Image 1 (cartoon, rainbow, N blue to C red):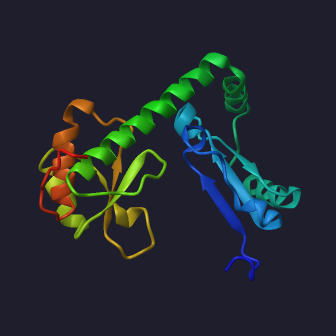
Image 2 (image 1 turned 135 degrees about the horizontal axis):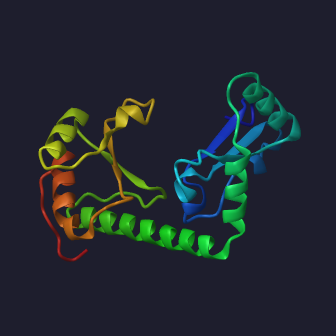
Image 3 (image 1 turned 90 degrees about the vertical axis):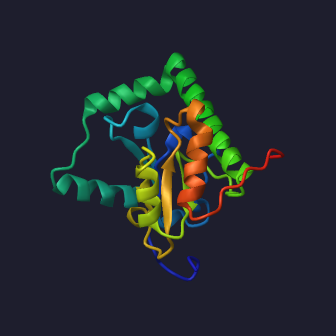
Length: 196
């Protein structure tokens, strides 16, 4: 589809340095029309709101001119702070620890859901997307159990119903009760398999 078009490709790498996988870009195939945005906000702090954009000099120059035309600008102090953190060994060690912790939490939730018959593809990220029969039912069911998730309608242009479950602060001591509630919220009958 992309080969036969002149569509500008904008890749939003929102998880950035917390990803378990190496960076992959369509720029490898379509370098003249790909902009890759690598965020530092999730890994280094949401207050930074910084990212690095890569692309052709022409595309990056156009993007800079659009940003400079309005009120958008990026603090040089924050840029220097991120540059320092990228070369600071203790900071990089903490990033690697965070990456491993988030990956373990994600794996634990997926394994708990699989034991209950809700098998999901292992992807990357700080959240798990779960298909549900009804987002409204899922939200109410989980809220009644003190669990907050994001409805899928805010995260997609597709018509499928799903919820977005964050694994960033998943409490290990409540994993089983959370997994039970998620399965019920998805509109499935709860059954636990000890074999998985």
